[in-house]
Image 1 (cartoon, rainbow, N blue to C red):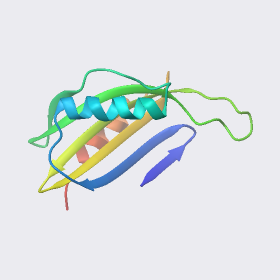
Image 2 (image 1 turned 120 degrees about the vertical axis):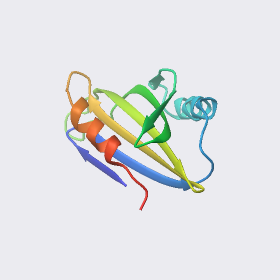
Image 3 (image 1 turned 60 degrees about the vertical axis):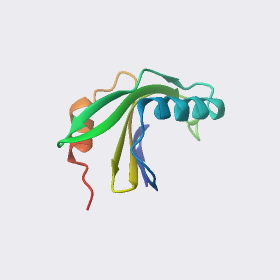
Image 4 (image 1 turned 135 degrees about the horizontal axis):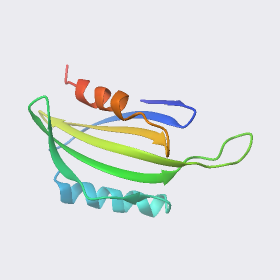
Length: 115
């Protein structure tokens, strides 16, 4: 499920699997970089959200071209990977460089829960 508005992005993907390690997240980003050469990422870290361990990593990439102008903008994305009972949720929260959505996106990430 993806929500996009003026290059702001909230994307949630669900899959089955085990809780990822930081090494597994690095391997996934490396694979994604093969598909999107503009992808640049930092080091994943383990954080705690609502008492549960979560892997977080920040990355930057270029947006898809604007359908009218063809221009692309630099997107900054925080990725959170949640795991619970054999399920994995990957939450990407992206915003154009220079736009401050930190508080709103932190609220989104910290409100995630498994139903």
